[in-house]
Length: 633
Image (tube, rainbow, N blue to C red):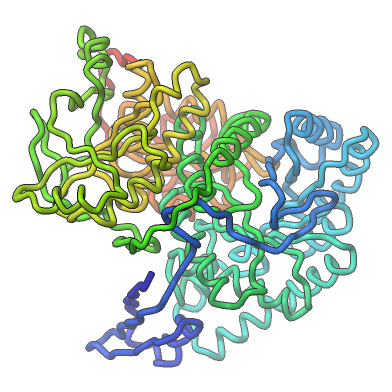
């Protein structure tokens, strides 16, 4: 895949400044355009061996305690406890509960050295109970906490955006010398931890979060997936200078599209660096939320990458008790493990840019009472039998309406491996709605990628979650939900699709709800309030589950409004980049309210904060009164 990038930078940047942004790529050209510099470069980037056939990325093996990550080893399931790290008994009990549920690695927050010191007692309690699950310390701001934690646990997670870094924009435009000085300061803080982990046989996760990039990175790369990747690579180079290789990467974001793009770019960049940069990857969607929405968002982000063979360990982050994360993660891994590598390779080039989202440019067509394609909303199809089952209660179904009945519409069904089929459809004078035939021995992601790559762009595409609906009958809802979200969400995040049809779920109302919730989580169609809610941890300053539910009850009728609910400020302000309003723990019992990334109300008593959030939404003209009744299906 040859990808063309265009970078725009302030006129005060020197050519050398801008060159630093892309000096790891080949073929870069610098062009002066008035008061800005534009970078144009065309490079061969590849994140996946074969976009049309499953093949797992080969990584080196990293060992965390008694658990190997990467290579040919199965994907490792992780989670994180929510208890206060100072409460040894509660922490030990929660670790044991997670291990009993099938969690293979448990993370514990250690926000200061004092907290990190208690990891010794937690470890001793866990081991005394006969549990040998590896423990991971979650570090953000404090190098001394990381150094302390490394003495007691098998792995230390550091966030390059927070670890010994500044986030106050004291310098707006870094010169080469200032940038190098900052990197040297980071090296002085990080290298001792690397040496200690090497000495003790510990592992490190270099975990970048979209919501917490440093001033230095934001200045050079902006709030972008490229910035996330370069932030991690800076720390990786320090580790490699110390001949330390027992580390993994992560690129987390609350927006699945951002997360997917960042991981894809990371894999491509690692390949550019050389064969020995084949480090394992930890996958996760931050602040996914709770319930069905949190599971769908996680399946889109994590599942789509696993389906492309990317990922060696995963953590599903839900605003629920941590033990509920484990079966979701396990089921998601099981769903992907059923994908076949297949025997066929296809001489087909993808016609979309996998490193930057853009919806495929189809033309608008009319189907029944709805317009599809072009700039229209992605439409929801259903079958005649399902429509007839719910037709008597459409008025009570709220926003989960069936829009187009499959049997009432002229749909062209083809095998995307047939050249003759493409020759026929591409010769049509007017744009058509096209889909993949059921019953083919193809995975839906591969099938629809093949379809999109060979079909004239003017034609519309109807996506399906499965090509074998008859085989899905009677299946538990969780694997059905995760499979549908992974398959449809992955394609939507590729920019493919003008309408969707969920075939794997038999229940008519449930299949419609699933369709709309997948479109919402993928950012393709916002029809209800969107929530970004972090999972609880030892840093959380209020009861996240109770508070999130209160906020849902108060604001759940505000269609198209995005609200972030964050337990603390570690990732909160940054992960709220796409949110309209934010509710963030500022201190025990105190809440700060945000508009976008900007804090506007401070130290509000927790008991008043939901009402004050409503007032803030009113002040910005986004409030409407709730309808008298809301019916869910």
